[in-house]
Amino acid sequence: MILDKNLSVIHTTPKTHQLFSDYYRITERPFFNIFLNTLELKEMQDFLVALKSFERGYTWSGTLRHKTPTTKTLYTHTIISPLFSASGSLAGYQVFFEDISHDHFKQLQSTFKSILEAAKLKDNDTGMHDERVGYYCRKMAEYLYAIKKYPQIDPDFIDNIGFLACMHDVGKIGTPDYILQKPGKLNEQEWEIMREHTINGTFILSSYPIPMAKEIALSHHEWWNGNGYPFKLDGEMIPLSARIVTIADVYDALRMKRTYKNECTHEETVAKILEGKGTQFDPNLVDVFTRIHQDFDDIWLLLRDNGNPGAVMRDRSPEYGSLIQ
Image 1 (tube, rainbow, N blue to C red):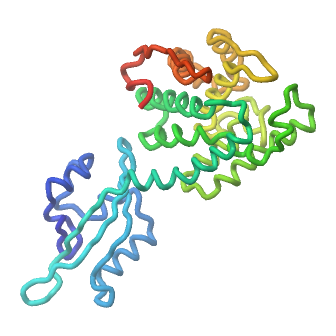
Image 2: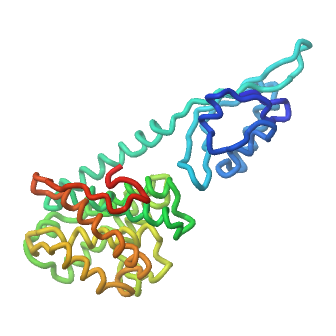
Image 3: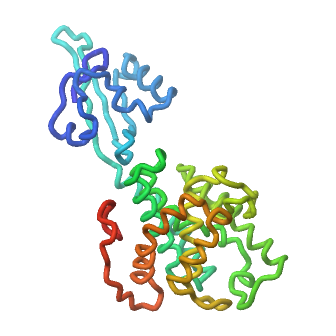
């Protein structure tokens, strides 16, 4: 990409057009427009100072993010260097982009996957519960995105909840083993300790750069009517991501056979979630669940813990993609 000395785009290569394919026209526009939704004021100031500074060689390098409502966030390692005229005066800039989105998220998630695996060692009776919850949540988010129900649900939201929903119980790494592995029901004192996993999880995920991580860990046991924990939030005070996880978590917990309970059938589980509409669960999300509940059963059958999935994928929802992406 070539910029004039006023930082307007005057030339792009086919590869650059492909990289920013969602941005229908990038020539003859200010370079900043491409990153307008993601650059913070401090970043922009540093950017301008570097490119206008002789001492800094009219050069800037770093990571830039590009985001539109219909695309995933694009991370690029970017180098901007000066172009000079024959007389030696500054004539413009050349820009080199390297797409590092995949590596960025892979590195970010790898650390937290290690924490998740450590937490699962503590509560080894849950099998693939966390993974299934992630897939349920992704499925519901894909459907909500397809019907344009919530403006905040975009491709990033779908990817984030698919991963971060798996981390909802990571705070149990701080819960004593005798509580996690108790074969019978917990007494009130033990329940008080168990409830602390929401606070612990928020602390563990405090360094994750996406707020959704902490929202899910903290609020996935809040109830729509305010009778949940840890803070008795109600209604839309509960983050949307956590309200989605609540349904997914309860669905899977009911389907599972544990040392202290028998498993429920899919039909029994759907009935119980309908019973919780407007009390435990967001009624609008329950309505969505009733449209896609069979996909939840497909995920359960595919990823159940008996080592013999045996589920045939049934394409009931072609409008928002295949079951496992």
